[in-house]
Image (cartoon, rainbow, N blue to C red):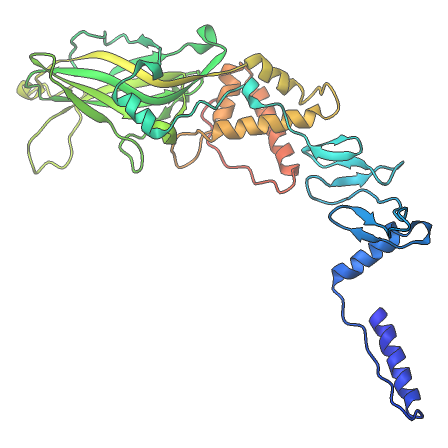
Length: 407
């Protein structure tokens, strides 16, 4: 508008200058960026109190007034926008203050600030990590400082007793946390057991591991993909201290990379025939073993020790239930958003420890179902509420597609 007005004046001057003995020198105003005109307009609107014009600062949201007249600043309205700290609308009784905030923010003294829930450490403590090198060193030594003491259960195998490995054997190491350790949850970082075979045995043990993260049935366990690409494999160490037997320490080190929650570790022990035939590319499993050729089925086994390694973390189930109650019955203004944000953070940090699989597992639902003892309907309602709240947050990421482990 200003440029068009200047050009109109220039054309008029040129028309008049035809009768002038001296041609005029005309200087047009240079083109200004949009920010200049925005600042000028804001200065006129907000920094023109008492007829004295000041300069408006977009960063400081305030006016710089002339030294001789410091009262140029008028009422500056609140900032309405889509950023997290912006207001969704200004207050009707005072345009300088926020009237409402976006999801994930709480209104405090007329402005919006992030609604940060209390630290998760009070409810669930994750911060007991140690470097991989230290974990590996402690596991190699089978150090008791990182052993998580669990209850051994097996109808088939007694520790320290010889058994015929013709059939698959099932063993459990469980923590019974709901009964004995309700204020703790546990992280699995390694497994170790000592297996002995009779001398010159033709049988080799093949352990298969399933991990139950928070309790429930065996079907709510995930399979540990040992010997898969990038995943850990068993390390076997020969022990020569026991005469007339072949004993090995079998150690599986998950470390920080593959650690995950556990309540019960299911161990299935199978046997396979050891063969020296170079033409055989794979070893066949026999359950039961070959009854026609007894010479190929020689040997007995025994398991001397069976241990899990990791650490236990503080867990407050009643405190988490109180946070969930605030989703429906907020105690004070702003606590509902804080509860949503806390549960979102808890959900994401728990699901981040999902085991390696083509599709990540929904471990958070397992925690709600089995450690908080919520019904399947309550778990589904909480998941839906968190998903709806997350979708309304500024710059929200789409919800990942998780596999359901717990019913």
